[in-house]
Image (cartoon, rainbow, N blue to C red; front, side, top):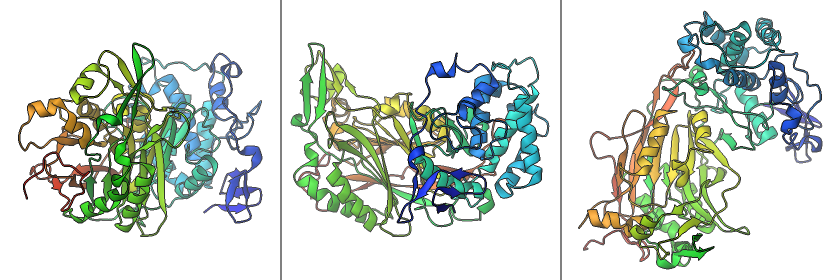
Length: 611
């Protein structure tokens, strides 16, 4: 691991400006606590005009110095970037700016000669023997080929001409650095994986996994899936992804040491094993939403603010929810590994109580919508994730991200849900949508999970491209919506992720708006089972998740399967990509309704059945 001493933290090639505190914790030194702040476009010139300009823009202090502190007037780029994510970042940026990934020679590596063999060989050498003279000579050769054309203007490549030598070297650097980063962020045991996790945590709080590459220009994150369709930059890599600057959208990959010991993605640590199975419990709470919970405040005659009173977070539901959920877990047919609540389902107090249940019952992952009104001004609708310690300890990993788009309540929705709002006005959800961020957290071996909140599932910008770049295995979308049918908007939106990058998608809404939905009441009579969620996985259509009318939750099981993925230039991942699939999908018995045997008065199912 990294050795923290006064003044710096050492790894084989990099020296980080970090101080050791009295208690042994490593912290950033004061002179490096801030990035260069993002230089203005005037400082950059008329954007980037040459290859050298772009490289210097990416490496503000040179290719071997940490991207902290003021930007250097003349960064040294003469030495190749030794840290694989840095090499990947500059190579991916140059390929993106030239659109050279669209060149016919790249497709399947047909025009790249021994590209696949060579880059896999040197990638393995990079992650195993980084001091190798053979590797050093090869990297110097590739970097020299790039710098030989450093003064040339960056422009799109011509399809009718062969790729220039400097771009061929860039492709080799990208592929080799990608191969060298196998296992990065997924529990690998190479020097790149071990030091990479420490660098990302201590330097950037996981905002990027680079070192000399400035996160104010571009970020690099570990990657779980490679899309099987399309022709784009993310199709070129297996283990790393290029993300926008952190000012546009903050991305984080949490590697999570709370995953079972010895679990990792790289094939060199693979061994024959049974397919992991996860039990999921969906609780569509709140079960009711009253008129007093929907508050409209007109701004002018055309539009107004919409606020939620969230009475379900007060009184008895506030104190009784945790034991209620624990009894639902008792009623499940098998172990619960994943527990999900919809948008704005919980208050912070309710979340803390449910977290205690999660820890006690060894639930691996909790994902919940939280209505945060703790700060001044408009509140936030958060997606909160809690990854419990797989070894049974008290420590857990917790993260949250805000909803990125406000809900505009349309006239038909006012009528459909019977909301106490003026029908001729537009009503906009009054929440804070600043601080755009998305988190991908490793929750099982080689799989990661990311969350979206309602509107964010339907809107592409700003985080959907980032989720696809990072190749998450599971997207959990938390909704406050009506019944989830295969012909509605959510089902259409989930197919985007199932196709590219190949994510499975879980959608959950609360029973509250399902109950108020005229569309549901008009189309169903008697003991109909509404769909409170959707499951979408690669290669299959969306499946509705029904809730029996007398039930309080839904339980189902998922299995983690492996499949081979290949990059656009022809490299294979050795069948290490992990896909979550629904068990008993074909039998039609995948979903099990869960009934609380002695439910409190506030836990009202859709219909009460006779005892």
